[in-house]
Image (tube, rainbow, N blue to C red; front, side):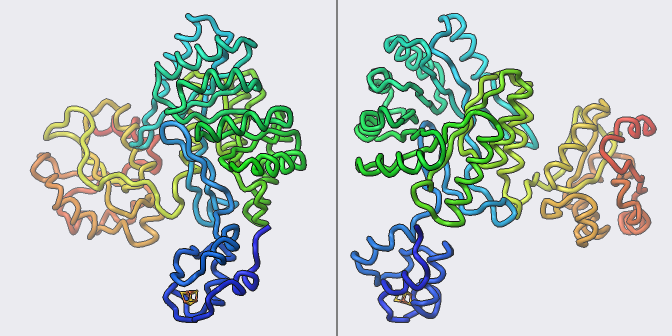
Length: 441
Ligand code: SF4
């Protein structure tokens, strides 16, 4: 259980020197207790005190790293709008060791093809979970090796048999896979195997009480690179457990459950599976193992993940420079929008669909949408004219027409006056651009 501010204060040097950034040791202790300060900021803490305070200084959910660049946990808030979420849910596609060689190769190729571009960002599936279902240790090791050879994605090795795990893990330890699961029956062998190979291990038990008990026992083996699996496989129970674990870790700083949590989908119908996975991505799985590897199924899930894990205080923005869509020439229409990625790419997508090569100038509105930017005084005629002059649009087109979003029709008069160009009020929504563009020809 976390220490209170007063308990921490008792361990402080009580010099009140202010070198930690706050005026007194008591204020620092309070900040430490609420997770707003780091113990390292005080240069005078004794080693004995540091040891005692370790639990207070540690993040509420331990960061666990595995594979290529997967980081699980290390979250500090319950709700994204409280601050931000830091480590996007790692999505892994399961591959059974019962697949034939041909099926395995086809599955791997499908997984490798899971690359997407959305609002100017590239993203792909994070990893592959190799699952032992054959009961054959040699087959499990072979499938794990084939998957590892074919892809550099993060690996999760799943088997309840420590001997099978040992054989599969030995040649792959340098890839730092996540392994699992350690259960009440095998935890000593499985945790020791993880410890010997310096890889993280999943601790699995049925229900939170049993999970807490098993984590404590596993930690007694001198290792704590854990990912938790509360054992439930139905969406309702899994959601409840994910929520309880996150609340206990963040609000109560309950250390035995202060680890990232993995969830497994149970649905077999792909769209139901994606809905189930969406629930776990939203609350609060650090990793989700899925069965489907079809692009069309996974795109909505990855879009959701991308939306949840963007920093709400830092909207995704595109560069506020002149963009051209298609083979533009001196007659190409000229659109103005904002540099909020979602707005820009909605406009760009519709302009592309219209098949009329066009220029688009996103104005730097700090990544806000059209109406928000206008309300905040960031989408003013003066600023638009300044951006037009800077990008040199006057030298690129022979017409003098600016198309502005319909929502800011009110600026058309002043924009025409300041720019000397004719302002054409475009559609309010980008979805109207295709039909609107026909009126230009
Ligand atoms: Fe106290 Fe350490 Fe902060 Fe100085 S730096 S005020 S000793 S907590």
